[in-house]
Amino acid sequence: MARDTLFSGESKNVEYKVTLPDKSEKYMKTIVAFANTQGGKLVVGIDDKTHEIVGVENEILFQVMDGIANAVSDSCMPQIIPDIEPQTVDGKTVIVVSVEAGKNRPYYLKSKGKENGTYIRVAGTSRQAFPEKIRELEMEGARISWDELTCVGYSVSDEATERLCQDIENFRKKAGMTEHSVKKEQLINWKILKQSEGQVMATNAYALLTSDYFPFSKTQCAVFKGTDRAVFLDKREFTGPIYAQIESAVDFVLRNIRLGARIDGLVRKEKYELPLEAIREMIINAHCHRNLLDESCIQVAVYDDRLEVTSPGGLYNGLTYEEVMNGHSKIRNKAIANIFSQMGLVEAWGSGIKRILNAAKEYGLLEPKFQEFDNMFRVELFRDSLPMTLENKNIGETSEKHRRNIGEASEKQETVDFNSTQLEILKLLMENNRLSAVKLAEKIGVASRNIENNIKKLKELDILVRHGSPKNGYWEVIDCSEKNDEDTE
Image (cartoon, rainbow, N blue to C red; front, side, top):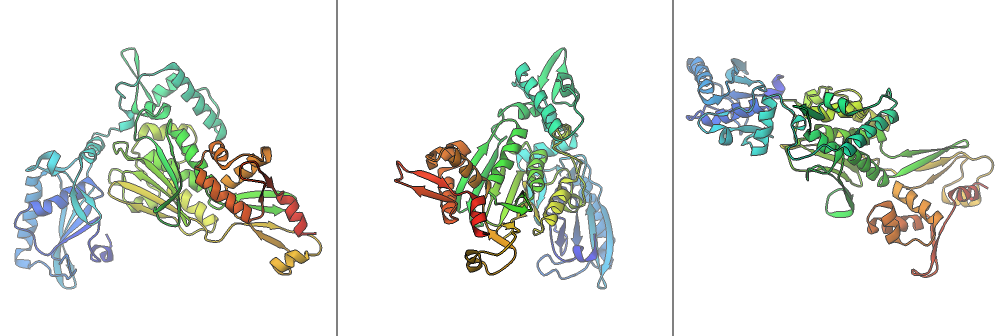
């Protein structure tokens, strides 16, 4: 660890002690917590409040180091072997106790036992692990993936199996992968199904891929007014097979962000304000890497300034934030990850973060933000604050109306603010111009309030006009192409 990082303050991976406490348990919690998470360093001889380097007297230096080694050996289970060394800083000697992320988890204090003596690092503190976290640590230590375990009480049906196999084939075809028939035997090879004593049994992954059996397996989606969660504009909850949840969640986001269009010659090219690749990657990664022992749901939130995807569970099995950003990956849900790869949803291990970053950069957006909390991981993709534009290169004189509105120019640029919901509204009203907001909401699958807000926007843009009474009237959709022609005559 670089000097400026080690001595710039306490963090998730660094803790200071001005002197060793009389009771070793007070700092053994930190040693255990480092081993259970991403490793770290305990530095003795620095004031944790002022960051002043006090140092350890040379007369007692090796005595203190021996005491730390003995305390770790006597107090911790399974065995932790730290690296303990002196280091000179600004003419003073400190002791640096380095603990690696352990492989034989969970680590705990012998005196308290596993249930009460297991600790993890949260921000800059060591906290007692909750039962569900201890269970995950146990599975990490045993190299067991929860999604590969038998789902007791869940039956394997021919109908569900055939539908899953067919969906896998369809996804492969859509992804441009080599087409081949998927049968029950492949699901057994991929550890989606288990075979024992002539019986075929479901795994937890099979249940996740074929039903809404687990209450926590759902994707909660919402649109908020502004930049916080104070006011809902729309919210939906998707259940069922997790790959279907992914598709529904992506569609939800696309319905609630702007869709711009560019007229290039005679070709109209549509483009969302956020890169589709990044949206899909964020939601796929959330499902692929979530902690399935945590009963929280995946959340997808659209704000005025960003798209935010939050998944239960922090980084897995000692993986550090720096490693994630450099493309390293540790697979939490092996069966799900494998099936996503077979379906073409995952292209290359460890590439998800880079794909999101690259897609945002190509779009000219601010760099996405990645946050790890105690029990969740969040990705934020920032929206462009400027509205999308509809650009149309015209020929000949610019109309007087256009000059008044925009100014004399040889190239027309008309600001529009269409999102996917608005396009669906226009499409449905062109088919039936007497549909009410309630009916539109039912057909599109969004809240009535969302429809009303979008209709108001379309009316402001002079794209939608209401004729007659609210009860017996009808809608007129102004042809956008004709409107453009009028402006360029």
